[in-house]
Length: 433
Image (cartoon, rainbow, N blue to C red; front, side, top):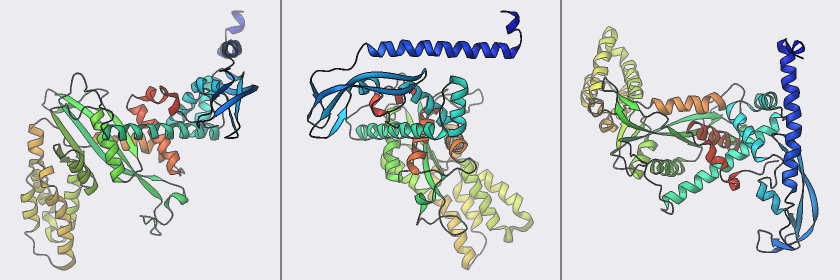
């Protein structure tokens, strides 16, 4: 026997054969265990709509599991008022209206969140010996993610209404950051119909998804720079308008202990909607415009004045960047307005400087750094790339909003270390076929 398994191919064949045999054995054991309770719950049961459904017969149900197809016989009830049937045992097992077991659905969601659906199905097939189509895996992953998103929204609403009071973190971190950003996701035509956008034809081909990253900080490194607490980042994403995003963001911050930390900090670019939400939900927070966005705007300002600055542009820009690092926004504006402009160029200058003037109190970078605070929103920008871009913005992809929401929710829960919370409540799982 040893000689026959000397080659790698022989070992692999043996491994697969043994796994197939153990899977068949496990499937039989599982069916025997499930057969111990056929789900008879008396002559009548509640139909779920306030009526009584009567026992009719025993019916078979087959669903796919991580051990392969499993068939169970369970009591079937029928409601004469609703003209609907139900099997209480299905709900108890988490397979009501579904053709996948909870374990296989979880496996499918994990794969569908990580990679495109067809390769995901192939991956599950190769690693777990389960045969799935990409369409079926994707349908389940999107539906389970959508159900999880609905549960998160319900929790946020309960926190906002003070029906749920999150327990304070122990120990409470020193600083809690809320970093906010947005990015476009390519959508199917029906999702962008009639919407203006940046396409060559003036129409939109994407929808903006807003992303929030909450993380904590309790220490500085040896050079006095802030250090993000390990594994402290949590994420949420939504296509909802700013108001809906604000509710989710505020609830997540409260769940993370916003009311118990020494200092709450909000990081973002100069978008008005971000700071409107910050003022609405957390007026006491320290607001900081991402330094790197501000530098980009300063480079744009120098380009706007390039025709006047000429060869002095590099030196002029270096001086303004130094002023930006020091948080001296009035000096930047004074230097830019030193040039007499008129007409369109004067209007463009007013617009460019409006970004700095409106955010002056959010650009005190030297002061913020002296307090040991982050001044860059790199955490959420990295999230836009890793959570959104690397899965939803691959070549040729076009999403429906519900489908994209489902996958984003799964990826956010995964990145937040909260994956298991999706599966702890069976009612949050979908009934996708």
